[in-house]
Amino acid sequence: MSTLARTLIFAGLGLVVLGVGVWLASRAGLPLGRLPGDFSWESGNTRVYVPLTTMLLVSLVLTLVVNLLGRLFG
Image (cartoon, rainbow, N blue to C red; front, side, top):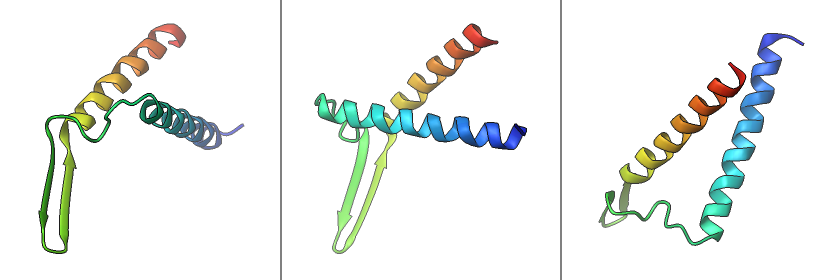
């Protein structure tokens, strides 16, 4: 199997796992996207939403998972 095909398969599986994780987090009542530090501005017909805290939390969790997998399989 070529390297590109393998990379695409693993990226797709990773997105599926990430999607299921976000879905389970929302079903569990975790306020992803509504944490303190997630900024939202509304003015007329314009809405700007910057989920800063959520992005930092997701980045931290993904960094820990990738490091753990790197230590296990690397």
